[in-house]
Amino acid sequence: MALLGMTTATAQQPVERPRLVVGIVVDQMRWDYLYTYSSMWQADGGIRRLLDGGYSCGNTIIDYVPTYTACGHSCVYTGTTPAFNGIVGNTMMVHGKPMTSVQDTTVVGVGTTTKVGQASPRNLLVTTLGDELRLATAMQARVVGVSLKDRAAILPAGHAANGAFWYDSKVPGFITSTYYMDKLPQWAEQFNKRNKATMTDYDLWNNRNGVTMTFDMAAAAIDGERLGQDGVTDLLAISISTTDYVGHAWSTRSPQLDSIYNQLDIDLGRFLNVLDRKVGPGNYLLFLTADHGATHNYKYMSEHHLPTETMGNTSLEKKINEMVKDKYGIDKVVKAHMGYNWFLDNEAIAEAEADREAIKRDIIAALQHDDRISWVVDCEHPYDQSIPREVVDRVVKGYYPKRCGELYIIPVMGVYSGSHDGKGSTHGTWNQSDSHIPLLFYGWQVPHGERTERNGMVDIAPTVAAMLHIQAPDACIGHPIPFK
Ligand SMILES: [Zn+2]
Image (cartoon, rainbow, N blue to C red):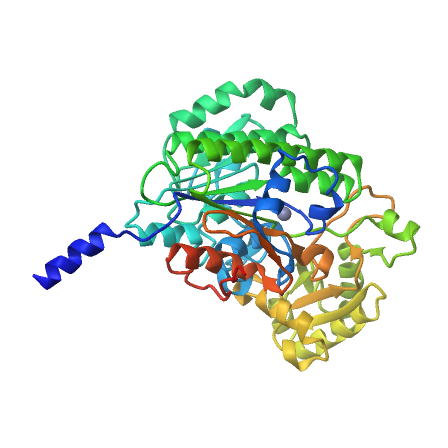
Protein backbone atom coordinates (compact mmCIF):
# COMPACT_ATOMS: atom_id res chain seq x y z
CA MET A 1 0.00 0.00 0.00
CA ALA A 2 2.82 2.34 0.94
CA LEU A 3 4.41 1.77 -2.45
CA LEU A 4 1.12 2.43 -4.22
CA GLY A 5 0.73 5.63 -2.21
CA MET A 6 4.19 6.76 -3.25
CA THR A 7 3.50 6.07 -6.89
CA THR A 8 0.30 8.08 -6.73
CA ALA A 9 2.04 10.94 -4.98
CA THR A 10 4.77 10.91 -7.64
CA ALA A 11 2.25 10.93 -10.44
CA GLN A 12 0.57 13.95 -8.89
CA GLN A 13 3.80 15.90 -8.71
CA PRO A 14 5.31 16.30 -12.13
CA VAL A 15 8.70 18.00 -12.36
CA GLU A 16 8.32 21.74 -12.40
CA ARG A 17 9.36 22.99 -15.80
CA PRO A 18 8.50 25.87 -18.12
CA ARG A 19 6.08 25.22 -20.96
CA LEU A 20 8.59 26.22 -23.57
CA VAL A 21 12.33 26.76 -23.91
CA VAL A 22 13.28 29.29 -26.60
CA GLY A 23 16.89 29.54 -27.72
CA ILE A 24 17.82 32.49 -29.93
CA VAL A 25 21.19 32.63 -31.63
CA VAL A 26 22.01 35.93 -33.31
CA ASP A 27 24.59 35.03 -35.93
CA GLN A 28 27.80 37.08 -35.53
CA MET A 29 26.52 39.17 -32.61
CA ARG A 30 29.48 40.53 -30.68
CA TRP A 31 28.92 40.83 -26.91
CA ASP A 32 29.63 44.58 -26.99
CA TYR A 33 26.75 45.21 -29.44
CA LEU A 34 24.47 45.03 -26.38
CA TYR A 35 26.09 48.34 -25.36
CA THR A 36 27.34 49.75 -28.69
CA TYR A 37 23.70 49.98 -29.73
CA SER A 38 22.46 50.93 -26.26
CA SER A 39 20.82 54.17 -27.38
CA MET A 40 19.15 52.40 -30.30
CA TRP A 41 17.30 49.79 -28.21
CA GLN A 42 13.70 50.84 -27.86
CA ALA A 43 11.77 50.72 -24.59
CA ASP A 44 9.35 48.19 -26.06
CA GLY A 45 12.03 46.43 -28.11
CA GLY A 46 13.37 42.99 -27.33
CA ILE A 47 16.92 43.69 -26.22
CA ARG A 48 15.95 46.31 -23.61
CA ARG A 49 13.40 43.90 -22.16
CA LEU A 50 16.00 41.14 -21.87
CA LEU A 51 18.63 43.47 -20.37
CA ASP A 52 16.22 45.08 -17.89
CA GLY A 53 14.31 41.95 -16.92
CA GLY A 54 16.73 39.11 -17.52
CA TYR A 55 20.10 37.83 -16.40
CA SER A 56 23.22 38.69 -18.34
CA CYS A 57 26.30 36.46 -18.26
CA GLY A 58 28.60 39.24 -19.41
CA ASN A 59 31.82 37.28 -19.78
CA THR A 60 30.87 34.28 -21.88
CA ILE A 61 33.66 32.98 -24.08
CA ILE A 62 33.91 30.42 -26.85
CA ASP A 63 36.80 28.29 -25.69
CA TYR A 64 37.70 26.47 -28.89
CA VAL A 65 38.70 27.42 -32.42
CA PRO A 66 37.54 27.88 -35.11
CA THR A 67 34.81 30.35 -34.11
CA TYR A 68 32.57 29.52 -37.05
CA THR A 69 28.80 29.22 -37.46
CA ALA A 70 28.28 25.45 -37.52
CA CYS A 71 30.64 24.97 -34.55
CA GLY A 72 28.95 27.70 -32.52
CA HIS A 73 25.41 26.48 -33.08
CA SER A 74 26.48 22.93 -32.20
CA CYS A 75 28.33 24.02 -29.07
CA VAL A 76 25.43 26.09 -27.72
CA TYR A 77 23.07 23.13 -27.88
CA THR A 78 25.48 20.25 -27.09
CA GLY A 79 27.45 21.94 -24.30
CA THR A 80 30.62 20.64 -25.86
CA THR A 81 33.25 21.50 -28.45
CA PRO A 82 34.10 20.35 -31.99
CA ALA A 83 36.60 17.78 -30.63
CA PHE A 84 33.63 15.96 -29.09
CA ASN A 85 30.66 16.84 -31.28
CA GLY A 86 32.50 16.45 -34.59
CA ILE A 87 31.30 19.73 -36.12
CA VAL A 88 34.75 21.17 -36.81
CA GLY A 89 33.75 23.75 -39.42
CA ASN A 90 31.10 25.01 -41.81
CA THR A 91 32.76 22.71 -44.30
CA MET A 92 34.76 19.72 -43.18
CA MET A 93 36.33 16.48 -44.31
CA VAL A 94 34.05 13.55 -43.59
CA HIS A 95 35.56 10.20 -44.55
CA GLY A 96 38.08 12.12 -46.63
CA LYS A 97 35.49 14.09 -48.59
CA PRO A 98 34.82 17.80 -48.20
CA MET A 99 31.23 18.54 -47.31
CA THR A 100 29.17 21.07 -45.39
CA SER A 101 28.44 20.45 -41.73
CA VAL A 102 24.88 19.31 -42.49
CA GLN A 103 25.23 17.89 -46.01
CA ASP A 104 23.47 14.54 -46.39
CA THR A 105 23.00 13.02 -49.84
CA THR A 106 20.87 10.19 -48.42
CA VAL A 107 17.98 12.62 -47.98
CA VAL A 108 16.19 15.00 -50.33
CA GLY A 109 14.59 18.36 -49.82
CA VAL A 110 10.97 18.75 -48.81
CA GLY A 111 9.36 21.88 -50.25
CA THR A 112 12.22 22.23 -52.74
CA THR A 113 13.88 20.33 -55.55
CA THR A 114 17.29 21.96 -55.07
CA LYS A 115 20.32 20.59 -53.24
CA VAL A 116 19.72 23.05 -50.39
CA GLY A 117 17.26 20.48 -49.07
CA GLN A 118 19.82 17.68 -48.84
CA ALA A 119 20.68 18.26 -45.21
CA SER A 120 20.39 16.58 -41.81
CA PRO A 121 22.17 16.46 -38.42
CA ARG A 122 23.93 13.16 -39.26
CA ASN A 123 27.44 14.63 -38.99
CA LEU A 124 26.74 15.73 -35.42
CA LEU A 125 28.17 12.99 -33.18
CA VAL A 126 26.45 13.75 -29.87
CA THR A 127 23.05 14.56 -28.39
CA THR A 128 21.67 18.07 -28.05
CA LEU A 129 19.59 19.78 -25.38
CA GLY A 130 16.48 19.07 -27.47
CA ASP A 131 17.44 15.40 -27.81
CA GLU A 132 17.78 15.12 -24.03
CA LEU A 133 14.45 16.88 -23.55
CA ARG A 134 12.83 14.38 -25.91
CA LEU A 135 14.48 11.48 -24.04
CA ALA A 136 13.41 12.88 -20.65
CA THR A 137 9.76 13.11 -21.72
CA ALA A 138 9.34 9.78 -23.54
CA MET A 139 9.50 11.76 -26.79
CA GLN A 140 6.46 13.84 -25.79
CA ALA A 141 8.40 17.13 -25.91
CA ARG A 142 8.32 18.78 -29.30
CA VAL A 143 11.57 20.22 -30.63
CA VAL A 144 11.78 22.52 -33.66
CA GLY A 145 14.56 24.57 -35.27
CA VAL A 146 14.04 27.65 -37.49
CA SER A 147 16.65 29.71 -39.35
CA LEU A 148 17.49 30.99 -42.82
CA LYS A 149 20.70 28.92 -42.70
CA ASP A 150 20.39 25.16 -42.89
CA ARG A 151 23.09 24.47 -40.29
CA ALA A 152 21.63 27.02 -37.89
CA ALA A 153 18.23 25.28 -37.91
CA ILE A 154 19.42 21.67 -38.08
CA LEU A 155 22.31 21.45 -35.61
CA PRO A 156 20.50 23.25 -32.72
CA ALA A 157 17.36 21.13 -33.20
CA GLY A 158 19.35 17.90 -32.94
CA HIS A 159 18.83 14.31 -34.03
CA ALA A 160 15.41 13.51 -32.60
CA ALA A 161 13.83 16.84 -33.53
CA ASN A 162 10.25 17.01 -34.80
CA GLY A 163 11.37 19.39 -37.49
CA ALA A 164 13.97 21.86 -38.69
CA PHE A 165 13.11 24.53 -41.24
CA TRP A 166 15.55 26.61 -43.26
CA TYR A 167 15.37 28.91 -46.24
CA ASP A 168 15.82 28.20 -49.91
CA SER A 169 15.82 31.48 -51.87
CA LYS A 170 15.26 29.56 -55.12
CA VAL A 171 11.81 28.42 -53.96
CA PRO A 172 11.50 30.98 -52.29
CA GLY A 173 10.39 29.63 -48.94
CA PHE A 174 11.21 27.70 -45.80
CA ILE A 175 11.95 24.06 -46.50
CA THR A 176 12.99 20.90 -44.66
CA SER A 177 14.27 17.44 -45.68
CA THR A 178 13.10 13.83 -45.73
CA TYR A 179 15.25 13.27 -42.64
CA TYR A 180 12.36 14.83 -40.73
CA MET A 181 9.24 14.35 -42.83
CA ASP A 182 7.94 13.61 -46.30
CA LYS A 183 5.73 16.63 -46.70
CA LEU A 184 5.88 20.21 -45.44
CA PRO A 185 3.35 20.73 -42.64
CA GLN A 186 0.32 22.68 -43.75
CA TRP A 187 1.21 25.62 -41.48
CA ALA A 188 4.65 25.93 -43.15
CA GLU A 189 3.15 25.76 -46.63
CA GLN A 190 0.65 28.43 -45.67
CA PHE A 191 3.42 30.59 -44.22
CA ASN A 192 5.37 30.37 -47.48
CA LYS A 193 2.29 31.18 -49.51
CA ARG A 194 1.34 34.11 -47.28
CA ASN A 195 4.84 35.63 -47.52
CA LYS A 196 5.64 34.82 -51.13
CA ALA A 197 5.72 38.47 -52.20
CA THR A 198 8.19 39.52 -49.49
CA MET A 199 10.39 36.50 -50.17
CA THR A 200 10.36 37.23 -53.90
CA ASP A 201 10.94 40.98 -53.59
CA TYR A 202 13.71 40.94 -50.99
CA ASP A 203 17.02 39.17 -50.57
CA LEU A 204 16.29 37.92 -47.06
CA TRP A 205 19.95 37.09 -46.44
CA ASN A 206 20.97 40.75 -46.74
CA ASN A 207 17.84 42.67 -45.91
CA ARG A 208 16.04 43.47 -42.66
CA ASN A 209 13.05 41.49 -43.91
CA GLY A 210 15.23 38.39 -43.32
CA VAL A 211 15.10 39.06 -39.58
CA THR A 212 11.35 39.61 -39.65
CA MET A 213 10.62 36.52 -41.75
CA THR A 214 12.65 34.30 -39.40
CA PHE A 215 10.81 35.50 -36.28
CA ASP A 216 7.48 35.25 -38.11
CA MET A 217 8.27 31.69 -39.17
CA ALA A 218 9.16 30.86 -35.55
CA ALA A 219 5.84 32.36 -34.40
CA ALA A 220 4.06 30.26 -37.03
CA ALA A 221 5.85 27.16 -35.71
CA ILE A 222 4.53 27.88 -32.19
CA ASP A 223 0.98 27.66 -33.55
CA GLY A 224 1.61 24.96 -36.12
CA GLU A 225 3.52 22.60 -33.87
CA ARG A 226 1.52 23.59 -30.74
CA LEU A 227 4.71 24.51 -28.88
CA GLY A 228 4.32 25.37 -25.20
CA GLN A 229 0.63 24.59 -25.32
CA ASP A 230 0.42 21.62 -22.94
CA GLY A 231 2.03 20.22 -19.78
CA VAL A 232 5.13 18.90 -21.56
CA THR A 233 8.03 21.31 -22.10
CA ASP A 234 8.90 21.98 -25.75
CA LEU A 235 11.95 23.59 -27.32
CA LEU A 236 12.14 26.13 -30.13
CA ALA A 237 15.61 26.93 -31.50
CA ILE A 238 15.74 30.12 -33.57
CA SER A 239 18.76 31.55 -35.35
CA ILE A 240 18.96 34.93 -37.08
CA SER A 241 21.29 34.75 -40.11
CA THR A 242 20.93 38.19 -41.70
CA THR A 243 23.11 39.76 -38.99
CA ASP A 244 25.98 37.56 -40.19
CA TYR A 245 25.54 38.20 -43.91
CA VAL A 246 25.39 41.97 -43.45
CA GLY A 247 28.36 41.85 -41.05
CA HIS A 248 30.45 39.98 -43.63
CA ALA A 249 29.42 42.42 -46.37
CA TRP A 250 29.61 45.73 -44.47
CA SER A 251 31.47 45.03 -41.20
CA THR A 252 30.94 45.92 -37.57
CA ARG A 253 30.60 49.69 -37.75
CA SER A 254 28.31 50.29 -40.69
CA PRO A 255 24.90 51.92 -41.16
CA GLN A 256 23.84 48.73 -42.93
CA LEU A 257 24.50 46.64 -39.79
CA ASP A 258 22.93 49.31 -37.53
CA SER A 259 19.74 48.93 -39.53
CA ILE A 260 19.70 45.14 -39.13
CA TYR A 261 20.16 45.35 -35.35
CA ASN A 262 17.42 47.96 -35.17
CA GLN A 263 15.15 45.46 -36.89
CA LEU A 264 16.32 42.66 -34.59
CA ASP A 265 15.31 44.75 -31.57
CA ILE A 266 11.87 45.49 -33.03
CA ASP A 267 11.19 41.92 -34.14
CA LEU A 268 12.46 40.40 -30.90
CA GLY A 269 10.11 42.73 -29.01
CA ARG A 270 7.21 41.61 -31.19
CA PHE A 271 8.22 37.98 -30.71
CA LEU A 272 8.30 38.34 -26.90
CA ASN A 273 4.75 39.68 -27.14
CA VAL A 274 3.80 36.60 -29.16
CA LEU A 275 5.31 34.36 -26.46
CA ASP A 276 3.50 36.29 -23.70
CA ARG A 277 0.22 35.92 -25.57
CA LYS A 278 0.54 32.29 -26.64
CA VAL A 279 2.60 30.72 -23.84
CA GLY A 280 2.20 33.26 -21.07
CA PRO A 281 4.66 35.56 -19.26
CA GLY A 282 6.83 33.50 -16.92
CA ASN A 283 5.87 30.25 -18.66
CA TYR A 284 8.80 30.24 -21.05
CA LEU A 285 12.55 30.16 -20.48
CA LEU A 286 14.46 32.08 -23.12
CA PHE A 287 18.12 32.55 -23.81
CA LEU A 288 19.81 34.75 -26.39
CA THR A 289 23.40 34.26 -27.49
CA ALA A 290 25.62 34.21 -30.57
CA ASP A 291 27.55 31.58 -32.48
CA HIS A 292 30.64 33.86 -32.68
CA GLY A 293 31.52 37.54 -32.86
CA ALA A 294 33.42 39.47 -35.54
CA THR A 295 36.70 41.28 -36.09
CA HIS A 296 36.64 44.97 -37.07
CA ASN A 297 37.31 45.93 -40.67
CA TYR A 298 40.94 46.45 -41.82
CA LYS A 299 40.43 50.00 -43.09
CA TYR A 300 38.60 51.07 -39.95
CA MET A 301 41.32 49.61 -37.71
CA SER A 302 44.27 50.93 -39.69
CA GLU A 303 42.82 54.44 -39.98
CA HIS A 304 42.94 54.57 -36.18
CA HIS A 305 46.41 52.99 -35.89
CA LEU A 306 45.02 49.78 -34.43
CA PRO A 307 46.88 46.55 -35.22
CA THR A 308 45.34 44.80 -38.21
CA GLU A 309 46.31 42.98 -41.39
CA THR A 310 44.73 40.73 -43.97
CA MET A 311 45.88 37.24 -44.80
CA GLY A 312 45.57 35.21 -47.97
CA ASN A 313 45.65 31.52 -47.13
CA THR A 314 45.95 30.52 -50.79
CA SER A 315 49.16 32.45 -51.50
CA LEU A 316 50.70 31.17 -48.27
CA GLU A 317 49.78 27.62 -49.25
CA LYS A 318 51.41 28.11 -52.64
CA LYS A 319 54.62 29.37 -51.05
CA ILE A 320 54.81 26.42 -48.65
CA ASN A 321 54.11 23.92 -51.41
CA GLU A 322 56.98 25.35 -53.47
CA MET A 323 59.33 25.15 -50.50
CA VAL A 324 58.50 21.48 -49.80
CA LYS A 325 58.70 20.62 -53.50
CA ASP A 326 62.22 22.11 -53.67
CA LYS A 327 63.46 20.34 -50.55
CA TYR A 328 61.61 17.00 -50.60
CA GLY A 329 60.40 16.65 -54.19
CA ILE A 330 56.78 16.32 -53.07
CA ASP A 331 54.19 18.10 -55.17
CA LYS A 332 51.40 20.00 -53.36
CA VAL A 333 52.12 18.72 -49.86
CA VAL A 334 49.39 21.01 -48.51
CA LYS A 335 46.41 19.41 -50.17
CA ALA A 336 43.71 21.60 -48.66
CA HIS A 337 42.97 24.24 -46.10
CA MET A 338 39.71 24.86 -44.32
CA GLY A 339 39.93 28.19 -42.59
CA TYR A 340 43.11 28.12 -40.52
CA ASN A 341 43.33 24.33 -40.57
CA TRP A 342 45.76 22.82 -43.10
CA PHE A 343 45.64 19.29 -44.44
CA LEU A 344 48.86 17.56 -45.55
CA ASP A 345 49.00 14.99 -48.32
CA ASN A 346 50.10 12.07 -46.16
CA GLU A 347 49.92 9.57 -49.02
CA ALA A 348 52.35 11.62 -51.10
CA ILE A 349 54.68 11.97 -48.10
CA ALA A 350 54.60 8.19 -47.52
CA GLU A 351 55.13 7.49 -51.20
CA ALA A 352 58.19 9.74 -51.24
CA GLU A 353 59.40 7.96 -48.08
CA ALA A 354 60.07 11.39 -46.65
CA ASP A 355 60.38 12.27 -42.96
CA ARG A 356 56.88 13.50 -42.15
CA GLU A 357 57.82 15.07 -38.83
CA ALA A 358 60.69 16.97 -40.47
CA ILE A 359 58.35 18.28 -43.18
CA LYS A 360 55.90 19.50 -40.55
CA ARG A 361 58.72 21.22 -38.64
CA ASP A 362 59.90 22.96 -41.83
CA ILE A 363 56.39 24.13 -42.69
CA ILE A 364 55.77 25.41 -39.17
CA ALA A 365 59.10 27.28 -39.13
CA ALA A 366 58.40 28.86 -42.51
CA LEU A 367 54.87 29.93 -41.58
CA GLN A 368 55.97 31.31 -38.22
CA HIS A 369 58.36 33.60 -40.12
CA ASP A 370 55.34 35.37 -41.57
CA ASP A 371 54.53 38.58 -39.67
CA ARG A 372 50.83 37.83 -39.79
CA ILE A 373 51.15 34.50 -37.97
CA SER A 374 51.81 34.08 -34.22
CA TRP A 375 52.04 30.30 -34.03
CA VAL A 376 51.31 27.19 -36.03
CA VAL A 377 50.07 24.32 -33.91
CA ASP A 378 51.08 20.78 -34.81
CA CYS A 379 47.73 19.23 -33.87
CA GLU A 380 49.34 15.81 -33.43
CA HIS A 381 51.77 17.09 -30.76
CA PRO A 382 50.08 20.29 -29.55
CA TYR A 383 51.71 20.43 -26.13
CA ASP A 384 55.27 19.93 -27.40
CA GLN A 385 55.48 23.54 -28.59
CA SER A 386 55.94 26.78 -26.67
CA ILE A 387 52.43 28.05 -27.25
CA PRO A 388 50.33 29.49 -24.39
CA ARG A 389 47.80 27.02 -22.98
CA GLU A 390 45.08 29.63 -23.47
CA VAL A 391 45.51 29.22 -27.20
CA VAL A 392 46.61 25.62 -27.60
CA ASP A 393 43.76 24.28 -25.45
CA ARG A 394 41.32 25.93 -27.81
CA VAL A 395 42.95 24.26 -30.79
CA VAL A 396 42.78 20.86 -29.09
CA LYS A 397 39.12 21.40 -28.17
CA GLY A 398 38.41 22.11 -31.84
CA TYR A 399 40.44 19.20 -33.21
CA TYR A 400 38.73 15.97 -34.24
CA PRO A 401 41.45 14.00 -36.07
CA LYS A 402 39.14 12.15 -38.46
CA ARG A 403 37.82 15.45 -39.85
CA CYS A 404 40.74 17.87 -39.35
CA GLY A 405 44.09 18.60 -40.91
CA GLU A 406 47.41 18.36 -39.09
CA LEU A 407 48.34 22.03 -38.80
CA TYR A 408 46.44 24.92 -37.26
CA ILE A 409 47.47 28.53 -37.90
CA ILE A 410 47.01 31.13 -35.16
CA PRO A 411 47.11 34.57 -36.79
CA VAL A 412 48.26 37.68 -34.96
CA MET A 413 45.38 39.63 -33.39
CA GLY A 414 43.49 41.70 -35.96
CA VAL A 415 44.58 39.58 -38.93
CA TYR A 416 41.75 38.18 -40.96
CA SER A 417 41.15 36.79 -44.43
CA GLY A 418 40.06 39.59 -46.75
CA SER A 419 41.53 42.43 -48.74
CA HIS A 420 42.77 45.88 -47.73
CA ASP A 421 39.97 47.64 -49.61
CA GLY A 422 37.21 45.20 -48.59
CA LYS A 423 34.14 46.63 -46.85
CA GLY A 424 33.38 43.65 -44.66
CA SER A 425 35.02 41.58 -42.00
CA THR A 426 35.00 38.03 -40.71
CA HIS A 427 35.59 35.80 -37.67
CA GLY A 428 37.16 32.47 -36.76
CA THR A 429 39.98 33.30 -34.35
CA TRP A 430 40.37 32.80 -30.59
CA ASN A 431 40.53 36.56 -29.92
CA GLN A 432 37.89 38.38 -27.87
CA SER A 433 36.42 39.98 -31.01
CA ASP A 434 35.38 36.58 -32.29
CA SER A 435 34.97 34.61 -29.07
CA HIS A 436 33.20 36.94 -26.61
CA ILE A 437 29.47 36.38 -27.04
CA PRO A 438 26.35 37.80 -25.41
CA LEU A 439 24.43 35.45 -23.14
CA LEU A 440 21.11 36.58 -21.71
CA PHE A 441 18.57 34.42 -19.89
CA TYR A 442 14.99 35.62 -19.49
CA GLY A 443 11.67 34.35 -18.21
CA TRP A 444 10.87 31.25 -16.17
CA GLN A 445 12.78 31.25 -12.84
CA VAL A 446 15.33 33.75 -14.15
CA PRO A 447 16.13 36.61 -11.73
CA HIS A 448 17.23 40.02 -12.93
CA GLY A 449 20.98 40.42 -12.65
CA GLU A 450 24.38 40.26 -14.21
CA ARG A 451 27.62 38.40 -13.63
CA THR A 452 31.11 39.13 -14.83
CA GLU A 453 32.72 35.81 -13.86
CA ARG A 454 33.93 33.93 -16.87
CA ASN A 455 31.65 31.35 -18.44
CA GLY A 456 31.99 29.22 -21.53
CA MET A 457 29.66 28.73 -24.47
CA VAL A 458 29.68 25.10 -23.25
CA ASP A 459 27.87 26.22 -20.09
CA ILE A 460 24.65 27.25 -21.85
CA ALA A 461 23.19 23.77 -22.45
CA PRO A 462 23.95 22.42 -18.94
CA THR A 463 22.44 25.56 -17.39
CA VAL A 464 19.14 24.97 -19.18
CA ALA A 465 19.32 21.21 -18.53
CA ALA A 466 19.84 21.79 -14.78
CA MET A 467 16.89 24.20 -14.65
CA LEU A 468 14.67 21.63 -16.37
CA HIS A 469 16.04 18.74 -14.29
CA ILE A 470 16.97 16.78 -17.38
CA GLN A 471 20.31 15.22 -18.31
CA ALA A 472 22.79 17.56 -19.95
CA PRO A 473 23.70 16.53 -23.50
CA ASP A 474 25.78 13.37 -23.40
CA ALA A 475 29.19 14.83 -24.27
CA CYS A 476 28.66 18.06 -22.32
CA ILE A 477 31.81 19.46 -20.70
CA GLY A 478 30.27 22.68 -19.36
CA HIS A 479 28.77 23.55 -15.97
CA PRO A 480 25.47 25.13 -14.97
CA ILE A 481 25.80 28.87 -14.44
CA PRO A 482 24.48 30.01 -11.05
CA PHE A 483 22.14 33.02 -11.10
CA LYS A 484 22.91 35.11 -8.05
ZN1 LIG B 1 27.85 32.50 -37.83
